[in-house]
Length: 245
Ligand SMILES: Cc1cc2nc3c(=O)[nH]c(=O)nc-3n(C[C@H](O)[C@H](O)[C@H](O)COP(=O)(O)OP(=O)(O)OC[C@H]3O[C@@H](n4cnc5c(N)ncnc54)[C@H](O)[C@@H]3O)c2cc1C
Image (tube, rainbow, N blue to C red; front, side, top):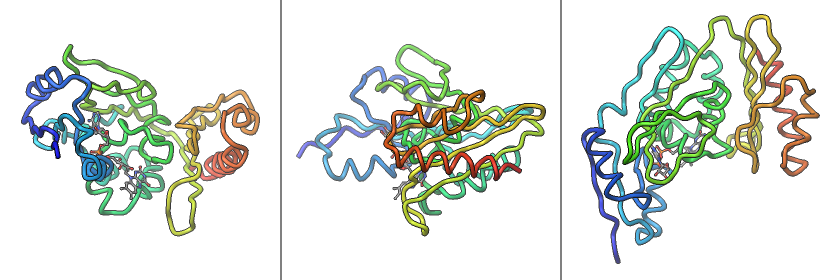
């Protein structure tokens, strides 16, 4: 059985060289929570695997006056600790992502690349207009979080701006009371002197910022989602606004 070629670069220049060599066929390995089970099941589907775990720069966290920048290999647990002082809603949202074991392994870069509509991390990055720094064989690029990550590109950092004096709320509707995959979730944000901005996510619909001028039910009604998902989103959005502290 053919195994994928494994590489572990130790700096960004090495990563860029491997991306140039492997092209779009190379798969990046971060915390492995999604990729490792796939590699076990069908290793022959993967030509090469580039392990990002040896690049120290990807584990950096920088807290500035108006933004927090997380290296792509920062785990969800580390991100939660770094973000909480600047985004109080984080404890109620990222604090619920999977189990502690998963939060200690899964990374912000992996979550941004996977684009799962049930991921609190991905929805948070959307709600706060995060910007991604990516590299590929041609160099470095800055992209908004809602732009897709093409094969052959690596996310190296995520910059999340924060606003002083903002109020924020979060609500998530889970498949089971005890946990399980999110059916729908919503982040609500309100800057001093302005109305709430709401981001919903769930079912087949990835994170989507609702139009501030349209009533919630009207904006959610326009989404291409089955009626139960729209009902869960409306409930989550309403409660997220109520939750704003
Ligand atoms: C049982 C379980 C429950 C979970 N529950 C939740 C939850 O409730 N909420 C939540 O937010 N998350 C949850 N997660 C985590 C989430 O589903 C993903 O598994 C995790 O975010 C992926 O991150 P990773 O670092 O493990 O990525 P990996 O598994 O290593 O990679 C995932 C994908 O992203 C690509 N990738 C990784 N890093 C980069 C990068 N820097 N640039 C470009 N592409 C990259 C990989 O090539 C791969 O295709 C759960 C995971 C599990 C296993």
